[in-house]
Image (cartoon, rainbow, N blue to C red):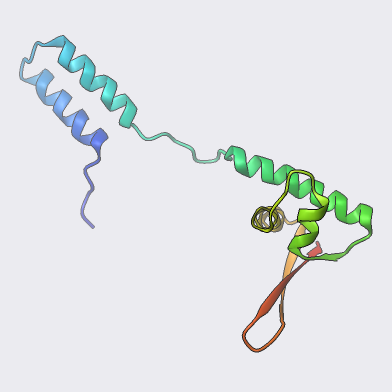
Amino acid sequence: MANTVTYFIALDTAIKFLEDNGFDNKDVIDKLVTLRKQKATKNTAGKKSAAREKNEDFANALVKAMRDAGETEIRAAFVRDNVDGVNTIAKAVAVLNVAADMGLIVTEKRAKSATRNELVYKLA
């Protein structure tokens, strides 16, 4: 597999070359250093996005809503109708996926016909 030259690597190499060969225009080097900082990748390993954290809050609210309603089995429409802040089926599915990742619920696929399936969600 070939190594990929990123903008950061290219700028870093150019700055080192200029400094090693006596290039003395400080303004140019400062601009390149600033650009290199902008192109540096940020380490986000282990950090949750704001959307993920919000969906986790919604997932906890979902479990509470299910228990309060006495429901053990739901579909995405239940989330939309019973969790404040979840207004669409797409958002409801995102919350359900996070809840499943967290181990709060389990997903069951049921065949509705030969070509269609339905997802049902149950408390874990």
